Amino acid sequence: MSFTLQIGQQALDFTLPATDGKKYSLSDFDTYKYLVIFFTCNHCPYVIGSDELTRATAEKFMKKGIGFAGINSNSEHTYAEDSFPNMVKRMEKYRFPWVYLYDQDQSVAKVYGALRTPHFYVFDEERKLVYTGRGVDNPRDTSRMTVNDLDNALEELISGKQISVPVTNPIGCNVKWEGKDAHWMPPEACDLV
Image 1 (tube, rainbow, N blue to C red):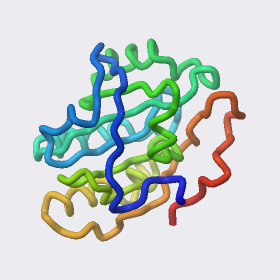
Image 2 (image 1 turned 90 degrees about the horizontal axis):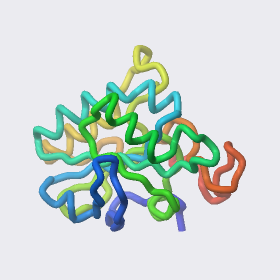
Image 3 (image 1 turned 120 degrees about the vertical axis):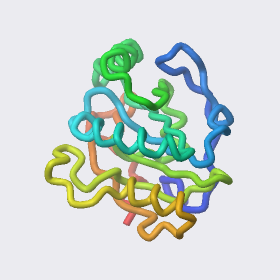
Image 4 (image 1 turned 60 degrees about the vertical axis):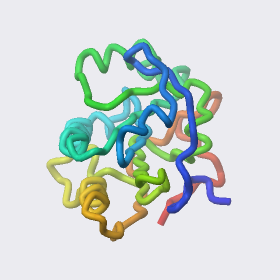
């Protein structure tokens, strides 16, 4: 079995606290025709470098019926900046348009097979996976970006087209797993393509 959720697989349920003081499950996003779930954090330079581009994509597509949920699964014991209080501070400062969820026990990252921050998963109206991987090809420095895979996939999705590039390798820092070295990845986790 592959570590990461495969194209065509169903979105898996979760119940996680958010920085807005509420708890969210998968069904809380039922009002959206499509859904983007992405694994992110506070400290990663690839996240920080591409957050404003992700914001632009989210704002563009939320108007078209696509929901966005960011999940931080990083261990705060590896990077204190990734703690829940720091998530709250970050959202207060930047006011990103997505719901920002905390996966403290890392169970959601494990069942989705999150590899890096950021790592995007796009689900269709039946909540089946239609795209997984990177947002852009240079998330650390978006001025050097040549392709926005997330934007392309979402455009194709809302146009009723087949996703032309359904799988890319996420680019970023690895998820910081509790009790492991900062650069550790599960042995069964590898590049997607």
